[in-house]
Image (cartoon, rainbow, N blue to C red):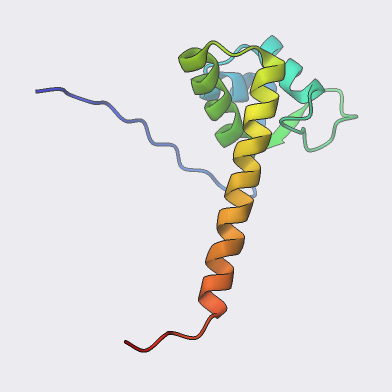
Length: 108
């Protein structure tokens, strides 16, 4: 029998985390996260602030980046491309669900 451990994290949409907290939550180093910010993958709430803080949605992106880097040994530019494509897929899936919800139900 194989035992699989799962970690859960409760995200508050209005919450913010520091760069240090984002690194702790994602398993990435602060330097790696700074690279992702520079590549536009994740965005601080106020890029001009002395200390960056990030919306809780960045935790999801950073954790995905960490898994992709670990599983596929991707460098930062490759992570940026993959994460932007994944985000686009999620947007398109959302649009399709919205369009399906607006369609009248077909009779059988």
